[in-house]
Image (cartoon, rainbow, N blue to C red; front, top):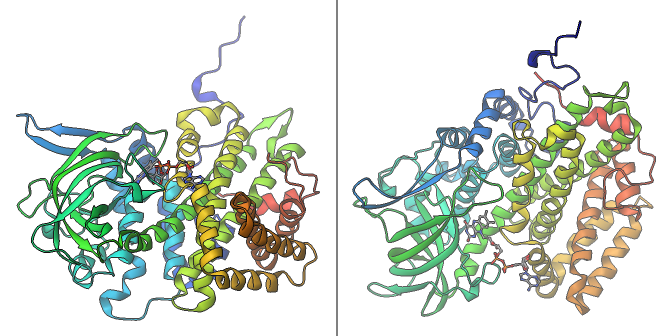
Length: 557
Ligand SMILES: Cc1cc2nc3c(=O)[nH]c(=O)nc-3n(C[C@H](O)[C@H](O)[C@H](O)COP(=O)(O)OP(=O)(O)OC[C@H]3O[C@@H](n4cnc5c(N)ncnc54)[C@H](O)[C@@H]3O)c2cc1C
């Protein structure tokens, strides 16, 4: 008799769903980074947040928010212009989860009480963001912008006094009301125009004063923005040309009477990934905005916001790398191929362990940078922040897409299928390299530091040289960086080499000092000694793959 075909519910040799995993407790590199970089006080809260963001329910919210992306509703039933974006309820739920954790404001909470900034506040917040990105990456865009805007608002004490109380509140209020009437507000940012995103000086949007020019005064703004994400935010920082040059303005989306403030959403971008987050093309027609900072100082004013968002790009990419690796290791621990679990196949173990090295490096670099943001006016930390923000953003965000692609392949065909979650990660991950300053722009920023503040570069390189002093593998890397600094003074095209070598050197010093020997030995042997081959697992080093994977393996609750 022919045997009955296996039924769906009898599937065997498949890994259990990746869910109910504590994204903090099961990530040793993250936990150690949080403690090392000054936020051990936050561990209990982070562990609870790790359980929440890695729960089956939260991961399902993340899936839904992307599977049912936002829709633009330009008109109401009677044909009146409304320019509203409708989101799936899951999007609002993930926003509520992240705002309740304070990811949009926690580092500024001391401003309310008049206390000193809490040591480790940026590190603790970044740990939350790293996990929130794994739950659902798209909503991190408005969360990041709302957090980052505080740095620019501080340029205008009156605006800070008015809006900070509605930012620094662990609440989320998506209601359609004038910003003044809301419990909590979110912020967006409008810099990019069709003519230029990297080169925003090419912007043509114009601003005319209503009754007298100057900081804090009202202007009318007209023009278009080619990318404006989170267009349902309550307020935006926008660049526009005033008489004195490119300037920064604060625009509410709705006027005090609830009418649209000259905003027309022309369309939503049909994006590769980042689908839960709406990104619009928008036209301003007589939109009213207040000048922030001085006329002509728009970039100088908004750059503080942008610097914060660059940190978040690195942290979020590190989180996505971790999520991809954890899912791949999880799968390889169950799936048997040729009578052996995948994880016990030496070639697969080599690939997974090699990826784990970059996840360790990305995590270590991102959280070291977060500590520099906690460092305030300290000279060494300020120098690290200035130089290593573009370096870290460049390296982590550029490493992530290749890693996520390789991790997807470890899952076999299941990796390519929507329900498994990998397509979401894979589509999402390139965006962090593109926005907030693409790769070359990060390199040009490093060249700017070289030219304008050579002492900053010397300070950071000297500190790295100190950390490398006792290690024969790291010392040549310091010399290599020094000679690339000299090359860059002569020719721009050496910049990518310098930025990459600086990132790898900084990661190497961190891993040497803090990671288990199996990790640091392999990282130094493969990433510094020139054996790196552009694909994972193709290195010649004899890594202790068992030790590396034992550390990286996630555990399901
Ligand atoms: C999903 C998404 C959401 C976005 N949301 C927003 C938003 O909310 N607000 C906003 O203002 N912008 C937003 N952007 C825009 C984004 O910041 C820009 O796309 C980005 O800054 C690049 O600008 P561009 O597209 O004009 O490209 P370009 O400036 O034309 O750059 C193209 C390429 O050239 C490189 N390049 C630029 N200058 C040089 C140079 N001198 N030498 C060598 N190479 C160079 C860049 O690195 C890049 O790779 C968003 C983009 C995306 C994809």
